[in-house]
Image (tube, rainbow, N blue to C red; front, side):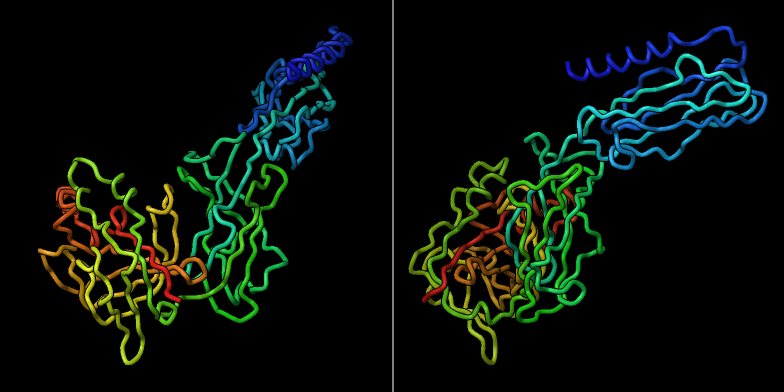
Length: 424
């Protein structure tokens, strides 16, 4: 109702001005196409100038701009005059919305006198500016470790609803807080160098990628903060702390780890379809007394003599090769599939059938990462060919009719993810 009264009052004031017009002058008449336009929140606006008869030469018709709307804040206006070419009776200029978030602002355009022409009824145009929605942004984490390369993400809300999967790109400004101790370009870099998180077309979060360059004691902290103002405000997590730790060396895993808990059971069950018995014998029998030991000396090794539960069907005592650390999409951790740095280890021997009765021993890779400040080991079994469980699912993954089978078909949607606790 307020917007309607606002536009009506503008219309009344214009009508009073028109009443003063004198119709006796027979010169060609210049006029805006209509007295009132509306600049929509996200669409450009075409404003027309018309003349009562075709012009015989090029005519330039300037106009002034005022009103309560702020140029280059609420809108942009690249052209400040109309140009009529010989034979034409109309020209159009365009106004573009910008960060128009303050209500009840308007633009007023006023045609200027042109020799040989008369300004007619619509010599003014009033343009109420429709406001845009304000985005509320929150980083998906308040703290994150930078090992090699990470994606920093923020979720966006509009009027309390998730803003995602749109067909336009959204750019969200951020800044590097002065509290940061790491130096950009020396200890880390923001890939692309931009100060914007980008939500691409049909994406769920606004992202940037940060890359590790060098570790230095006392210069290992970066604070990214969302920039508030205009279209953006900070939500619950308006900043994120990045700990510039660098790659995790194998020595961080050395030691005894106990009490494995299989955390991905519900996720795996949710991913299985069309095979009602595939989850009947998942390897959930893991004992609190189970323990594994990583050692480093002349060779890196894994000792599993202390494992008596279902993990014993897969693990073998073996040498271990450190492959490297890289981001991994962890679909079991978040519905959006968050990326986290994980270390890839190659086990010299494993029973990839994950079975007490069916044995196929070969090299296999596992993924590991440290949580809770090094007190918890996440141990991801992703390289396996099951014969006691998920058998139908595995056949589906290997079905050539679905395209070339992936190198590790169970890696993304069917990982056996264990959490161990470090022995005191």
